[in-house]
Structures are given as structure tokens and as C-alpha cells.
Image (tube, rainbow, N blue to C red; front, side, top):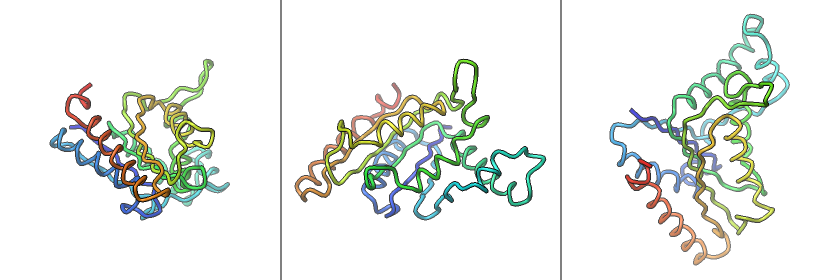
Length: 206
């Protein structure tokens, strides 16, 4: 049975445009994969704590030397990683805030990017440990940034996922959402057409 993990990072939870586009894809994907399971992680409703010295110290400490508080912190991170490892497909709703990621998504990445868990260092360089997965990223932006220097998200998200072994990443963009109602409607329509293309049974089987 296939497993899908949907991660919403909009501050508006399921009401954000990126979350809604992700949900459209997930609905189509589940129709093409009957019996598949879905796990939804909403970073607005259940934010991941931001990384600080104490949390990093808990990750770095040897398991047998951790305090009760450190064990709870490490266990929380381990649970996020186990959830990610179990998924065959990852769907990420990604709004653009001040030219960057939502801070809650960065916090999530900080909790799953752990040496020995999702990647390892070797003499030939770092190696990701989460290969064999497919990721779909639904990026919603108020302006027009794709392909410009101000699109800091695409390279970062692609690089981070690739670093932990998820190299098969597809982006779907909905841009110009704040320019005008006409621009918003046209961009969402294009994104929905793209979702229809990539969620067709033949495309998902490829």
C-alpha cells in the first residue's frame, strides 16, 4: 500500500492557496491509488519548534547520555523522520513569505535534516538516506518570481530534499496571485491544469 505525506506550511493552514493546490493534487492522487494512506502534517496547526542550542544539543548527545528533556526532544525529531521515511510520496504546500520559506517549514527541515538519520557523511561527501521517493511542491506566490534571482525557494527546497536523498522533485507554481483578480484566476487555472496532467494515472505510473 502506497503512503503519501502532505505537509502544509501556509500560515492560513488549509485555507492557504498552496495548501489548496496540494489538496487538489492529493485528491486526484488518491483516486488513482485506491487504498493508499494519507498523513497530513499542518505546520500552522502543529508548528515544529524552532531550532535552538538546547534542541541541537539533544540531537548531538549520545542516546545513553541524554537527559529526560533531551530524550523527549530527540524522540519528537525521530517521529518526524519516521513519518517521512514511511512515505512513498511527499506533497508540500509552499507559500512565499518575504522571499523565503515559512519559518515553520525551516524549523521542520531543521528537525529532519540529521546526520545518521536522513543523511550521512562519507569520504566522497554527504549521502542522502531517503532515496526512492517522489516529491511534489506546490508553490504559491503573490508576485512573479519563477526563474528570477528573487526565487530563493526553488533551489533551496530542491537542494535540501536532494541532500537527504529525495532527488525526484516536481514543482507546480501559482504566481501573480496578488497582482489582480484576473492574474490570480489565470495562474490558479494553469496550476490546476498542471495538476491534472501530473495526477493522471499514466503520469503517476511513470
